[in-house]
Image (cartoon, rainbow over all chains, first blue to last red; front, side, top):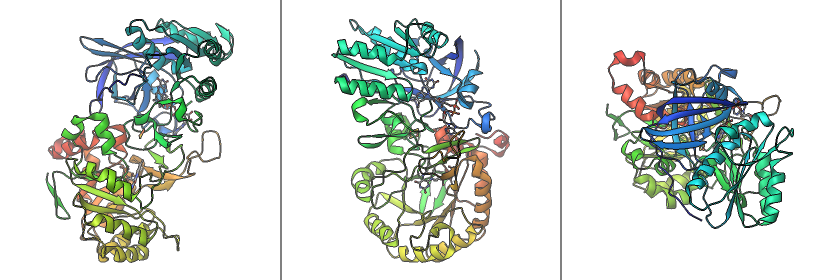
Length: 277
Length: 293
Ligand SMILES: Cc1cc2nc3c(=O)[nH]c(=O)nc-3n(C[C@H](O)[C@H](O)[C@H](O)COP(=O)(O)OP(=O)(O)OC[C@H]3O[C@@H](n4cnc5c(N)ncnc54)[C@H](O)[C@@H]3O)c2cc1C
Ligand SMILES: Cc1cc2nc3c(=O)[nH]c(=O)nc-3n(C[C@H](O)[C@H](O)[C@H](O)COP(=O)(O)O)c2cc1C
Ligand code: FES
């Protein structure tokens, strides 16, 4: 397994300008120009807020910044073009939905560990819903490595949601819950069929807790390593508050500094109470 | 704006509130830039206890429009591993170290104080008194009688400057502060979080894993100002004021209220460099106070 040094986040937060905004079904993708930070690793995340009118939504929130994975990071002569992909599920993401081209975001990061690539095994990427973001980033990272063939499975509620994968020209096999495109059912049906044929795989997954738990159990049964990009409520993102812990076999682990990617074998369950989705 | 605190010379009056900045984690995340731009003039550790604690089950955070409720539950390695593994690391930070301690009995606290007394890495101790007396159920930091009794017994066991951190659930923090002072405290700090809770969305069940938690952030700022004024005018020992400080104007208000130092807590979560921003803002001339940093 290759252990890549984590890119160092600049100290503090910084202003970035939004250069593009695209809509795919219920999702919004924002591109922001980061002139201050390093190229991140797939699976790492940023803490985001708007410099003005952050607050005043439902219950007067949001107050704290929001954790978002990056979906794509393109190095340019003028900094890194960072993509964030999200859905409005509450006051924080609703506010981010309002952000347009030319607007400013306050970001800190990149934070967290990112996926640890296992060059020896067949990479199997699994995305559920908005969990697509870090999977797109990982697929980008793998494409840079010559000779690595990856298989990507995406699960979405409907064809409308699935249009997000089209934003990134992601090659994938699709499952939709309503059967409006691809396999009707859960993405884990597709993953199971693949792993039963190809136990020499490593699974990299991000999605709702129930999906991650199904992936964890499946991989454990088949003896396939799994890396799960998880979520928990976060206040700071850099290890300061101890609010983001999840239970692991080693006790409570801060997901922001020791995750968000955890090895499936570290967990008794991926079902985390209070996780954002 | 250098300031003297319990015989320690500090570069400016901004420190961190206990439990709101893991400097060792921040050094790993931000690298050298963190140490070069260390946000605080003194560093206050998370509260340590005699025995290791795992902390409360998640969820531990609930967001408010103007702050948050936490039920972190004082996770820490316990005294022995703190001394063996962390103390030497803290000692390399570019600021004096204040260690926050809590005990569930006088004997526990005495054991902690005696273990830390000879350690030169430690400039001062903060006694987190937000803990009930197991026998009476009264919170030590909000009850003058409990506080005086506790402080009197502890004083003999440490030569370090001792800061009594009060608990805000009292209408007379001044009486508690005076009790701490008369029993030998070198300083007092306030406010700690206020007790509160939240129901999980759409239910009447508690959201937080521990059932209830402590409120912090701008929501408690007016309580902090009120209590700091009341305490500062009642004791001669220095006061560390905290509660909802977001910018240099908030910090200046606590200084104007009589605090010697101001601690930044929840705002660190929104801005890892909040301490730098606030101390720089304090050093600016007053005209810029209309748009505080
Ligand atoms: C590492 C990481 C990466 C992430 N990446 C992405 C991404 O790429 N794209 C994306 O869309 N999302 C991502 N998320 C999830 C995203 O951070 C959350 O969905 C977001 O914080 C929701 O904020 P909100 O205000 O919109 O919703 P909220 O109202 O905060 O609701 C979200 C959930 O939080 C809980 N909740 C409700 N009210 C409160 C409250 N007052 N206090 C605390 N919790 C409450 C509930 O469980 C609710 O379902 C990521 C999360 C993590 C930890
Ligand atoms: C997540 C969190 C953890 C805290 N942990 C501690 C602690 O370990 N010991 C302590 O004395 N106070 C602790 N506090 C209280 C703060 O030190 C401070 O008294 C309080 O939060 C008010 O300041 P603020 O509004 O600026 O956050 C904690 C507060 C928060 C928000
Ligand atoms: S989000 Fe604060 S410690 Fe992880």
